[in-house]
Image (cartoon, rainbow, N blue to C red; front, side, top):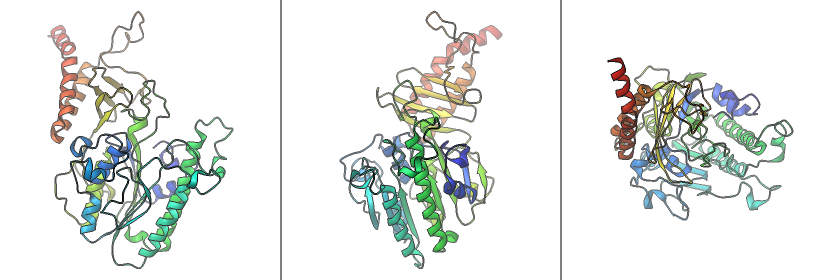
Length: 411
């Protein structure tokens, strides 16, 4: 999220996405429910958290993750297609190797691990450019068509290895910017996005098309010492950009409510006039996009399994606090207002530190931790996430002695 100009980055070159943001709504607190590709994408198309759809790891060598790996077989693509929409996909799918039956058009599409360059030639064709060409051709064919459509354009970059066409590196090289290839890829995809937006304008589709821009997760650049890369509950991995523009969307709106990928399915169905056949974990963003005041969540719930150690986690985040509960018992707690980088774990401080006094001066937050655990418990119970229920209760049991000690001291 912090790699775009519209979100405050001062050095990245992203004029077309910034133009997108100024023409629609920008969500400042958007998250993924699981910081890894396949589980997040399964949520994106089902409206359910990973514990419910059952896809909790990346899939490779599988024809169709929804048919073979998921408890949920029907996606929003299937639902709108039945309702008369033409459906198309371009690029990375990461939910199976074969053409899913819900898409009428399946072009330049692949599961994952394709090179960013056609035929692997750095000086050749950049795969996102070819994908963009294909989707623009599709859009031009829809300009005069009466049939509504749902089109997905999914780029693999800026995923590592970080590469982009050479001219996109110029703003970043020799200026102390780490991972210049990452930001060059951000700028390259910005240009692709601009071409799509221009096509929508040229074909007069902009006035009748809702456009959603998001990612499936963030990138930690292996910054965290745990070595888990993006398989963590830190904001580097879970916080994402989410921009929406289209008819009825308040131009220039900035929304601070916690939202996530589980909200995309109910939003798409709302605009398509389709009633979901089952209860979803998300809610339609349409009221927020249209500037209406509606009851909304004030926290966000994340699920995760760490990559190296395979430890299951649950996270609850407000605009002030974050609690990460772990099956291994090494729970973490952060004050996001004083430590937005999440570098100081204040779980059950003050605490001994093997002869040091680094954590002895930090106040006790047991009551706040317990309150966050209660929030986690409520979210987990509401969604039927048994692991989340168990972890929330484990945290509450962990802090209970502190709370009892405080009660005795003040009683």
